[in-house]
Image (cartoon, rainbow, N blue to C red; front, side, top):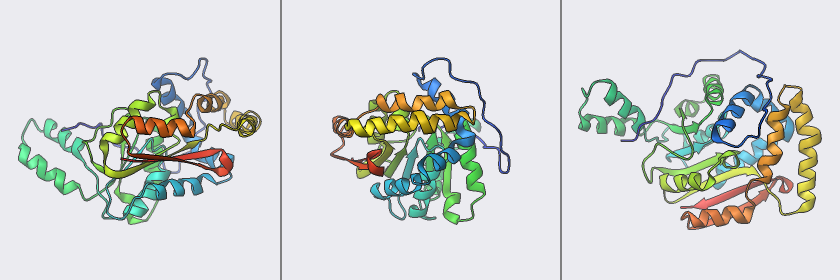
Length: 294
């Protein structure tokens, strides 16, 4: 059985704190750098997303969920879930009958009881929990804490069926062919080993299911690229500097330049085994969404 780190997420409802203003003094390269960056920006991440996109990111995220093909009762996964936007949208589609493979919790319970539970009983518990939740995974504990706080403030029954898990996109703690649909929002670009992440997505998806991946578009148009650079330099970074996060958002421009074009993303998906991949430019060409079918 796979093992998954689970932890109790403390409530931070009603508490607002200014992010750490310490700058990054070296390039953001390794996974640990990126994890630290997202922990730092977590307290203002949602507010800045609304500000920079004028709220349009909510429309793009709904498109991402629609392209995933998720339907009521599905088993769904949101990787690099951040503060939970896509997970909440997925839960609305899945409904209260959505499913989650909860092997990690059962495995830990088995270990912590000194083998008191039999293997057969563990299997029964897995089946019992299988009809309960949507799973959302991220490597930033700060982001997960905020996601859990947002969940506690919402009243829809389907929102209570989301389970937040701290984990790594390049080492997903789930069995093969576990999920009917999956999403990644503004996450693949920030993963150092993107090929490995795509291989992991392919592994955990059921045959015929889709992953829908939203991110900034690395445009092949020199005009779009120039406008995108100007917006980051003269709008995004100056606003972020007011929150003490100028260097953190300087990283955005380099991360887009180091990302893959739509054609390159389609090629990568095919190379790891996806039967079909289609990239869509959205948001006037500044955003993009890859839809890959297992």
